[in-house]
Amino acid sequence: MTNSMNNTIERLKSIIRNLKVEEIDEREVKIEIKPEMVLNALSLLKGSGYSHLSIITAVDWIEENKFELVYILFSWNDGGKFIVSTKIDRKKAKFVTVKHLWPIARYYERELHEFFGISFEGNDDMRPLFLENWDDLPPLRKDFDPMEYSKKKFPDREYHKDVIHEAKVIRGDLNG
Amino acid sequence: MGEVKLFFGPNHPGMHGNFSVHMYVEGDTVERARPLPGFLHRGFEKLMERRLWYQNLALIPRICVPEPDINEVCYAMAIEKIAKIDVPERAQWIRMIILELARIASHMMSFPGIGGPLGLYTSSFWGVADRDRILDIFESLTGARIYHMFIVPGGVRKDLTPKIQDLIVKTLDYIEGRLPDYEDLIFKNRIVHTRLKGIALLDRETALELGVTGVGLRATGVPYDIRKVDPYLFYDKVDFEIPTATDGDAYSRVYLKYLEIYQSIKIIRQCLEKMPEGKVNVPLSEGSALRYKVPKGQAYVHIESTRGEYGYFMVSDGGEKPYRVAVRGASYPQTFIGVEKYLPGTRIEDVPIWLSTMDVCAPEVDR
Image (tube, rainbow over all chains, first blue to last red; front, side, top):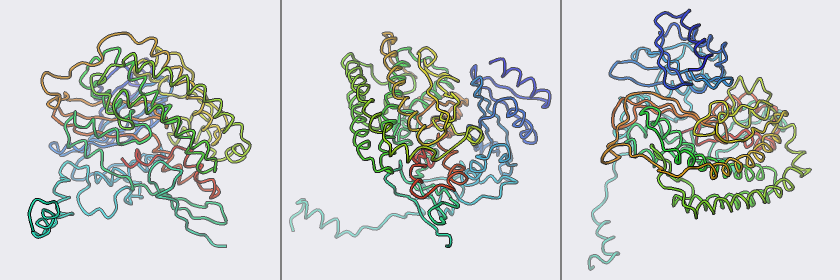
């Protein structure tokens, strides 16, 4: 871990109790925090130089009945990456927006709403972004089965026997 | 005169892939713009969750068309980070060569990208023709021209033979000899100066606030490149510079890409020189690679693509398939907030230039 990352973690520890820190490699650290402390932690990290938001994404832990929200922050000064993760309830998938910290968060949140069904308080723009006329579960949830969906949406066509027979005649497999 | 709604795309020759913008135009100036993605959404992230670790290698290059190798490197590096696999040194140098060749090929494609909207078709033909020489190298090395599926977890598929190294050296010499012609054709051309200078401006604060990376950011005067700031592979062992400009306009972005080709050539030459002999891959597991399971863990890997920060966030639950893979498309910020907030004010004829030099790339945004 670099020095500035160590200092930042010390500062994080002063505002958050029971901080779970996992070092992935020398310039990448994952911290797990409770949902209510996420905004504080993100603003502190942004103020400490980790101001580039790489991505906001989610992981569906269906067995734990939780969604894990992941914010990845990067610093252009020392090349350090912080993976800030928090777990929210899967049934009441709701969180607060961070669009005031990073404008692009608005679109990441909109994407998460479309693909996971997580809504973000304070971000009203939740129109569909990539999918058109979607009528099933949000597709990146683990309980959504693409195979079943495509069978339902695009049922098998029925082929008439005589068409196949005709094709065989044309190909020369059968006579007349 | 009232406001007119104008549709740009989803098909346009000056763009990579299908992306649409709804523009509300008054006179010939864009008043409001709305990005409309989704025409290329193929559900890669879901598809990856349903395939074995090794099967995905055939799928991932298809996320990004002009520069597919970045996907292979990100995917392989993320697996290696989670599973703590030591990749042989020679394989890492070969990966760097592949990445830089892909960078040159992709930058060559940006000349057609800018030639189309300007009507400067010579640069389109030259760019595509010279890119083909790089594709020839890929073909003799991997058997494929566009989607190589060459970089695998644990190394690369095959070694660089002396014959292919010769071919690389010759091609680089050829391209280096050709580049002054491009300078004469594009960057000493008065029409290009009139059309590109002062167009599609993005200042430093805005670029940093939005999270724009790559040439879009470096054209505003900051030398931020992931190869230098957070070095991966052996980028800290080679000598190269980060070209920057201060104007933050379309012209400087195109010119930076041109200058980066020189740096890539420099890097590849050093790689060929410094590359040690040895193995090029390590077996992941005993027996079939298809049965390979990545241990439980998470990692984020990002690299500098031609369009900026390209990243993979990967989660493994120890199973046969990835639990979750999230892809960070490099041009995400400028495609959405950029089009919505900073495209207005542009004239209609400059919109293709704006989208092309901002590197709006639909396949990596839609995924």
